Length: 170
Image: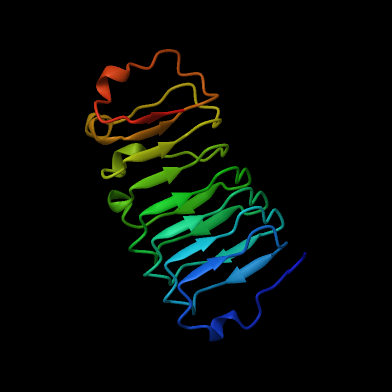
């Protein structure tokens, strides 16, 4: 199935959850859907524009394999807790508000640059297949992390004794 536009979605002002998986969207403006809490745009490789800039209630964003998307503005998403940008290889810029409040960050198979010092509440971090050769994880984050994905990256040595709450390692 191919749906290239969600024309008229702005009229669904009470919409809280939106899953648009593998439908062929090229752009989507959800700025009028301010009740949204959860969006999932998995496997929309043609997606080049996604407007989530005014969605202050949004707490979960999942973008998987949105390979044509080059930037993402989440500055209005002040309640964001989970951000998954798995295999979004075209992304070069992601604007995230309140990084300190984010609990889950998944940048697996992306080439984004980031500074983990601003993410002071993370408990779930996935940086697998990012091409990293070094990683500076703040001490406080090491003590807090419960899930850590670091598959297919060449870190050399990883001292797991510094991660006392780790329950999942990939």
